[in-house]
Amino acid sequence: MRWPSPPKIMHRRATSSIRVDEGLVLRPASKSHITEIVEAFEETWPDVIRAMPWINPDNEIKPQIEDFIGDTERKGRTGLLHHWIMIRPWDGYVIGLIGFDRVTRSDRATWNLGYWVRSSEQRHGYARRSIDAALGWLGQVGELIVEVKVDPNNAPGSKTVVRTVRKWKGERYVSGDSAITVAGVRTIHECHLIEVGPNTSPV
Image (tube, rainbow, N blue to C red; front, side, top):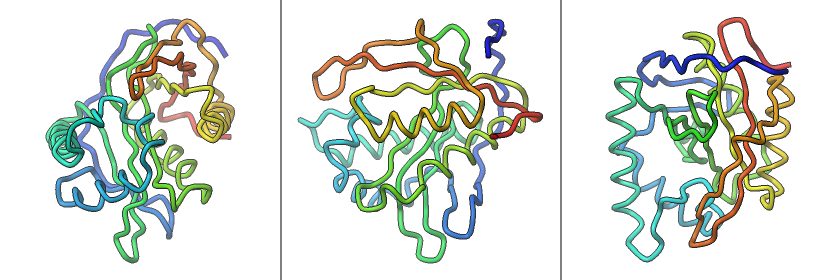
């Protein structure tokens, strides 16, 4: 599918909780979960750096994550960013993070999607279910295009992205490919685009 390049209209909406299913809920990112997020981050090191390449491993991790969560919590209230913590509802266990920011590399997308799942909870469908729920939530307010970038050397991540793009009838967007520095190494990340809206839903 090929779309014209629409104006990047930003529909403002405060981040709200999303009940994905009986085994997963997405809660707006907040400092009340800092300790659990840091624990999950450290468990998933160094792979998690792909999702948070701005983290400087030479500095203490917790203050960097505190600043990040604090910023996203404030901006989430006004709809400037949307980040959620993946949580197991019966015990509050933190599974990972998923969110949308405005750091896009293509000329079409309004939002960029990013996520990570802690090492011990990978391969259980949490990423897939969270992505579908977050895209559906974002599309409730209007039609827009979301950019998803992935390191082609990250086989599990590529598999998840390809599945998501196919399910949401998205497309590969080569001109949006860009080099991203992760842990001091620059790697070309492949760009995909997904259109969401009130009348769109996954296949």
